[in-house]
Length: 381
Image: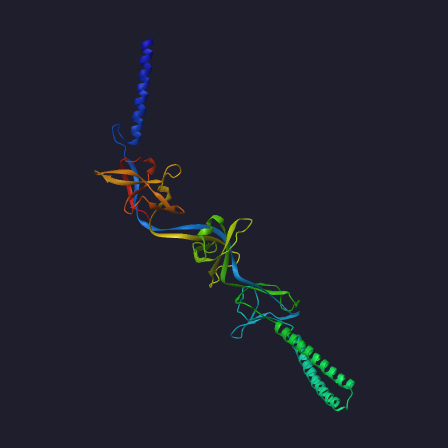
């Protein structure tokens, strides 16, 4: 009875082992005596270009922004520009203006009257001085001949000096009136676009009050912060590619204009300035922009997908290539050196040559020298 139970359990064990063995090879599509051949996808290694980049974010600014204020007080008589053809346009946000173009007029008639009064006063003081000089010269002549007293001579000299001082004051007032008249006409100091209007025509204004803001948008600036570790890689002239949400898919090319000489004490980052031509006025101040700094570029090098490169954490990085030996395809482990890494691509600096067959799918099931079956062949793009 005891012997029967032992045979029973041995039979059960053998049956289970046979079932597992049959199921395993049936699932693999192989017979127990078949060799294991791994299916793989292969691409031919070619050369291409790759860039080493740094990605940042920033905001677009106008190249120059000027708050144009009145230098004199009074009522805003006019807030218009006159075009080359004589047409007039109200000063509003978005208006394109030229350097020197008249934007506003402040109490023009008042300052014209003040100028006329100052000019008349200066002319009167000139006549008075001429009379005083003649009287002085006459009294000096009489005094030298003994026909006038010293007191009379001194009085004539003093009168001439006072007349001269009065004329100087009148000339200063005349110059001030001329300045006020000139400043009552407000001109744009730069070529640009009106980005803000701070007062309407007809309102009273004080000296120093802002009238409009004009910005130069034909060139825009972007200030960005770069981590300290990249400081040696970035110089004036480093190539830049910019993109904004307003124009998806469009890349604006520029370059680093300057690198600030000192780091930010709080963030320990380096500030860089980028300038970009904006003749079409597509880019607006305040727009968020994505920045890609191209610090290095290589052409005609082996570039592969990063997914095909294995190892690198503990052991050396490697890939698998397929070779034809005795009419049988086999996969071989190839140690490689990684160069520039760009997004999902990387440069193979050493260990792989153009024309070789690189395993791009199925490599995780390979060991060195194993036989493979190529189920797809292509070129690495």
